[in-house]
Image 1: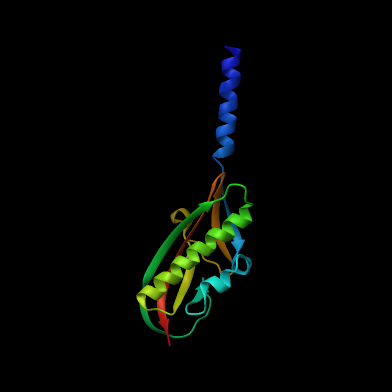
Image 2: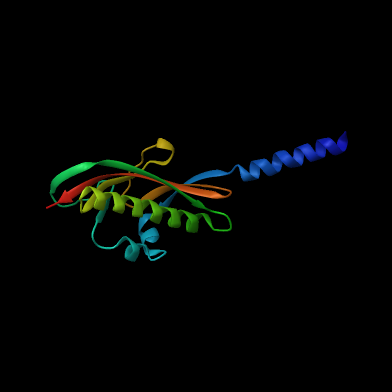
Length: 143
């Protein structure tokens, strides 16, 4: 019986370690400097976070969400979040191109459907093996 209880408690402890779900804010500037992000995003679409100032809008195509996940195993939280942020940004870029826009404005974090707005940080959730970033932005054509 004692062996069963010890095994049971060990399993509970190990499950709680793997059930980690930490949510943090990470630097947009640092993420765009990592993994050749700026080069991979290209220059065809401009990105404006939160309430950042941008040019006059000629046409609005709509507001779109992206929710990306990546393998976080054997990566630091920062590294995993920067990687998945790039995936989310690439998705917004691709949507802008598809819709005919040249910018995505008012980009906000939308992690677990909780909207947060910042010009400096994005929100990322990290578990034991998966990291995720969700973004929401409006695709526009700037004059």
